[in-house]
Amino acid sequence: MGMRSVSIFGATGSIGQNTVDLIARAPGQYRVVALTGSGNVAQLAADAIRLGAELAVTADAGRLQDLRAALAGTGIEAAAGETALVEAADRPADWIMSAIVGAAGLAPGFRALRHGTTLALANKESLVTAGPLLLQEARNHGATILPVDSEHSAVFQGLVGEDIAAVERIIITASGGGLRDWPIEALAKATVADAGAHPNWAMGQRITIDSASMFNKGMELIETKEFFGVTPDKIEAVIHPQSIVHALVGFVDGALMAHLGAPDMRHAIGYALHWPDRRDLPVSRIDLAQIATLEFYAPDLTRYPALRIAREVMETGGRSGAVFNAAKEVALDGFIAGRIGFMQMSEVVERVLDAISPRLCLTSPMSSLEDVLDTDQMARQTATTQIEQMEMT
Ligand code: NAD
Ligand code: MG
Image (cartoon, rainbow, N blue to C red; front, side, top):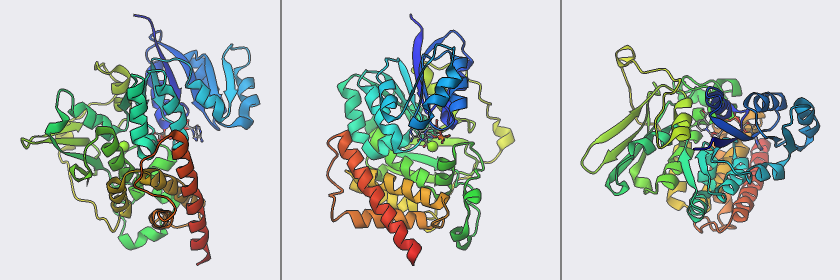
């Protein structure tokens, strides 16, 4: 068997760095084709050199000279900009990690499917905005999509050897995020620093804030529906402060299969990297007696309106996922920039869904990637307008 070729999109981020770590621990086992990043050009170049990549791409067109300089004399190609990113997905690789954050991750991952690759999908936005298109593209080209979000990797593992028709429910767990134990009245005043601290997982800033608001869990409910093709009434989220149980699959005979593991993304990444095999991974092992207690409780929808909105989006389907995601991204930018408060993020998303529906049939399916990007743009504009209006009042 030849050496396995891999590319990592979003290599400089939290998921990307965990992926780089696993590849770097197996010298001589992988041929690294492309690594991509955006602003962090020094990290990108250092990893490209360390892993012996053929190509490094920064999404930031203005950083091409910096990247070239950092790679001078190494023989590693440098490229920059959005087009270069999609072109990097045209370079054949057996396994591609999709770990760019946000809707920007959709186009490169979508393109990679055309070449029949195995796409390890961390970029949940791809499934939320364009689930049916993405799965269809994979089917058209004999490509494989493997989930990397920890909950979805856990569900996927729970389904090995099972018939999806025998699944009665899928339960994904949520830590409750950094503000879980705050009094509900205090949430309106939460700062970016408050919301950006996670009790259990070390992740990128955006997903950490999305965990505190549970927009992340809302995205994951939609992701579950899209990826596993089950109806919304079978999908639940439960709060589990210890983050040891990642997901549970319930079957028609009443059995409930749980996936337990340390909160370390290298498990889900490694599972996708070695699938369908299992290999030794450098993650800590669970000591049940030491943990002693695992707690579970139902989320309060007043505290987490994102869960209620996500459920509506699951029911609506069509374009509503793309609108939800784009509005959420703009609302998150608004919160990070100090323009709106923590609880106003869900208000923005809800207003955008309401305001856009007379102009856009939310239930109608998406016909192409352009369609998704148009919907995304329209939702972003609407969200920007909503935030401006909220700032004035
Ligand atoms: P991050 O912010 O740490 O890293 C994001 C990566 O994307 C970086 O390499 C960055 O350079 C690149 N990037 C940012 N904006 C870009 C743009 N416009 N165009 C191209 N590249 C761009 O994010 P992360 O926490 O690693 O998350 C990555 C994805 O994985 C997200 O979709 C997230 O929801 C998902 N995810 C993350 C975790 C986690 O533990 N961090 C867990 C589950 C799912
Ligand atoms: Mg997750």
